[in-house]
Length: 159
Ligand code: SF4
Image (tube, rainbow, N blue to C red; front, side, top):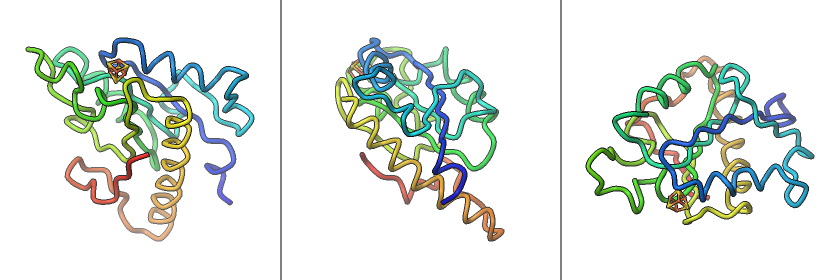
């Protein structure tokens, strides 16, 4: 097993959610779900993170922030869109300033459904993301370019 499989660190960003999905992400860290027992740490530093968890939709105000966090993460990295708002804009998609889901600005590897997304689904999404992360690491080791463009979402999975 690789180092990433042993202790994946995540960074969480709230795009423009109603905070429903954010509460569920935090619930994953509580003793009830306790993802830290798997070595999963919620870090505030993009340079330390393997997994980018995004809740809420992307709008004109936060699109640059989402992109900047993503760009600061080192390869290999995966993006998990948590909740229907992060998937496609959700209930906010027709608001005047909403661009859509996270994949309007960065490539998304795993889409976690739900409104709000349940902690079990979020954990499942992160686990699926770790599989993608491992594939990307192997591709990097073999000299093949990792899939990082928004157009290259052919391998995307839904949790
Ligand atoms: S998916 Fe539902 S709970 Fe999550 S941020 Fe959107 S409206 Fe809130």
